[in-house]
Image (cartoon, rainbow, N blue to C red; front, side):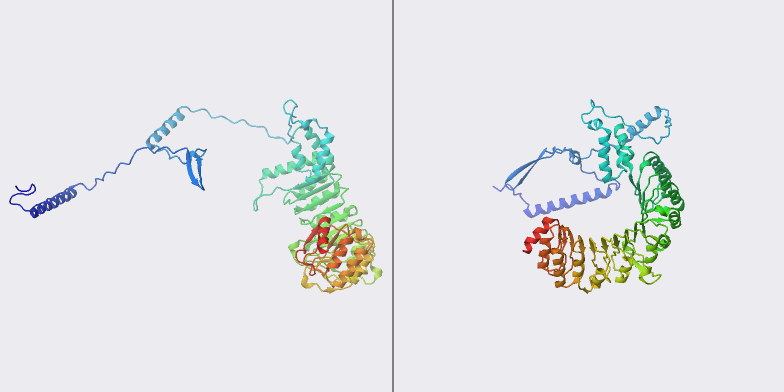
Length: 556
């Protein structure tokens, strides 16, 4: 028999050729069908699997460091992880159209808003809490006198405005306590800050004017000290209203204000007959108005403080002419960033015009002295002077003779501030007529300009009984001179009264330092910064007696 796969008269190679011919014929037929098919027909997309996703479990299992952590997935933000619901746009458009039709068919007549009456400037009345409604009604059971005493302590720390204005809105009892005139003795008004380059609306400015007028008429009747800070507008209106409503005004301060004119100063002179102190530092005002006020009512002024500038020569000359014969405090300053500023000053004219000055301060100003006549018989001096301050952050060209002319006859001097004065010597200080000096500030801030000095013991020997504070910053005295002077202070009768000592940058030695600390039992401030002979780690500021005693233990 023949095998099953064998055919009579045919070979295996013939069968393979026949299969190839059939495959090629089928490929050709497929190409013809594709070429005859329409070109615009797009191929059908495969349908996506519409099977729903399995629900996310309410927990997650994490493995780490030999433990399994099961973390809950349910939270208030669970909707963030859920897929967004697909919305049919056609159905959404039909819904919107139906809603619009309903609104058109159900149209309601427009409501006319009622006109509210204008709000009057009346205090808000708040009904007091009853003891039945609230258990925390302790404020209603307090006497008015107790509330006034509590408010007085807070006003002394925080000021009357806006504290008392807020307390008056609590209830009727607190309103009555906050309206006590004794609480409104000292008032300081600061202007509301606005963005740079922007101005307030007219309605806002009108509200400010009305508020100031109401406060002046209802609260300022007993004001003694009034301050206005950072006001760039309506300064004239505020000064006029305050002067008319405050007959007992004693002190006026304008800080960083602009726009005070002659009209405001004339109103002050007309109504405020008790005005004794005027402070216009860092403010821009009409100089002619202030000078006219001093010329007409300068006899009642006791304190005058202003910032020196090119336009303020008239003010200083008016004071030197004797417009303020009862003046007790004169302070002239300038801005710290103004650089080197010279102040033309005639000491003889000022001594003649203001003989009762007790405090004379020239801060960050270099006085340029003018001499009218020479000779000691022309110097009147300041016989009542107790404080002289000529401190500057840069340097001063004052010399011993200039200081002697200022302090001629000043036997009551207690405070002498010469910080920045590089031309003063120990011999010049020792020759001063004051014998009971309590505070001596003689620090120098530019080490390159300081020179070696000697005879410090002349000063400590003269004032060892009364000296309480001493500043010798960057004074280049020798080590022997420092030991002798510190020994005089420590062994003098006034060692117990010394409580402040600044030795920054000096050549103080360890034995002298140990001696002064052990004897000055009241010392509570000691500055040893940049001291050359002090070990590292101890060159710092010491505050408090306990801190200073610990330093003494380390030095021993």
